[in-house]
Each structure stands twice: as structure tokens, then as C-alpha cells.
Image 1 (cartoon, helix red, strand yellow):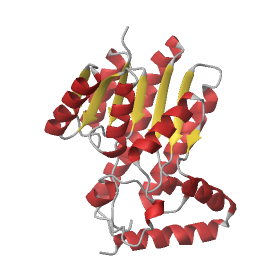
Image 2: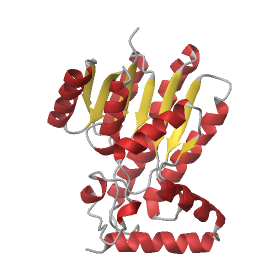
Image 3: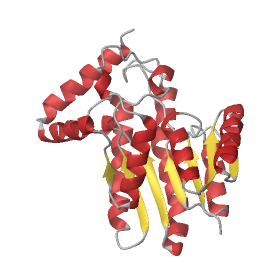
Image 4: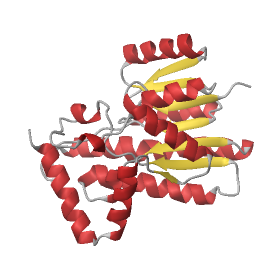
Length: 256
């Protein structure tokens, strides 16, 4: 039986890198995103380049209907790899943002990966085989509004499931990248001027690292020496200092 991988946020950035890596490894790909023409373009590219089969699902994961559409697909089809990658950021302070936007962020970053894992894991456990990678962020280590809180949730849940499933061949891992050259910051209207070049990560390279470490059974993947060092500093520093640094980063991102 052919193996299938489902990737949310599959048309750009980290999600698109995952589709190519998995296709190269022989997985057929289910691509999930909102932009249908882009989905179809990416699917054709995977088919022609790697000779794999693809399926595209247009879905807005900020909506109940969009999330339910993917839940039902996973329930009715064997998914061997699940990449929870869909996400977005807001460039406003919590007290200045729209409540609907904050709710949509929670729905995409928390509700959707939780529900997709909940429907995917029973089948994976029964087959005693499967991989789930949740694309979290180093932002989950700081205090940076709903985005940071959501990524913290995703990392901790991944660690919990990793431990719960330790006696099985089902792998669950959180990928915690730092600043990565994708459309994420541009879409969020975030200013990244002044960020040193060495702090930027390459999407293809970090995805390759995350996949290798997930297969090896690592609970949390932090690609890049600079972010591994940051992880040590953040987890060692006084929490008050971490909060202050995190807030300063967010303020700079809001400056045009």
C-alpha cells in the first residue's frame, strides 16, 4: 500500500519544503491550503518532478468547516505522515488587535493541529507506525502575545504525545525554527530590518533536519546553532528578562 503524507500550509515556505522532501522520499502528498491555483501548481510540480501521486484540498483552517473537512479526510483515508504547518502572525499588540483575528489565530495554531492529531493518532497507533511533525517556533519560549502562547501549547502537547507514545513506533515531534526566509513575515506586515543575516534560516535545510530528528525519535527539533544557543540562554535566564526581550522583539517587528 502506498504511503501518504498530509501537509497543511503546503504551498509556501516550510510547508512547501516538507512536500518536496516527503515526495523525494517516496510519499504521495495531500496538500492543504486556501489558494487553489497555487495548490494545483504545487501538486503538478511534485508529480512531474518526483513521480508521486497528489491530492489537493482547499480549506480555510481558521473556520470550523475547513478544519472538519480535513478531519473527515484523515478519518476516511490512511495518513502515514501529518505535518501541521499552517499558520500566520499578527503585527498588533493584543490590546490593539481585533478579537476575531486573535480567535482565528487560536483556531489555526491550536485548535486545528490538536484536532487533526486526535483523528490521525488512533490509526497510527493501530498500525504501530506514523510520523507527526508540528511546526512550532522558538517564539513559544518567549512572551509575545497569542502567537507565542499558541506555539508554546503546540510544543508542550508534542512533547506530551512523544512521551505517551514512546513505547510505539509512532513519532511525534515539534519543530521549533527561528527566523526563516519565507513569506511569513511579509504576509504579517512585520518589519525585519536590522536582523543580522546569520539569524536567517533556510527552509529546505531546517526541514531536512527536522525530518531526520523526528525519525530518530527526538521530541523537539531546533535547527541552527544560533537557535540552539538561544534555547539554552532563554531557558537559563531569569523569566523577567526573557519577557522583556520578547516584548522588545515584538515592538521592533511592528515598526515600519
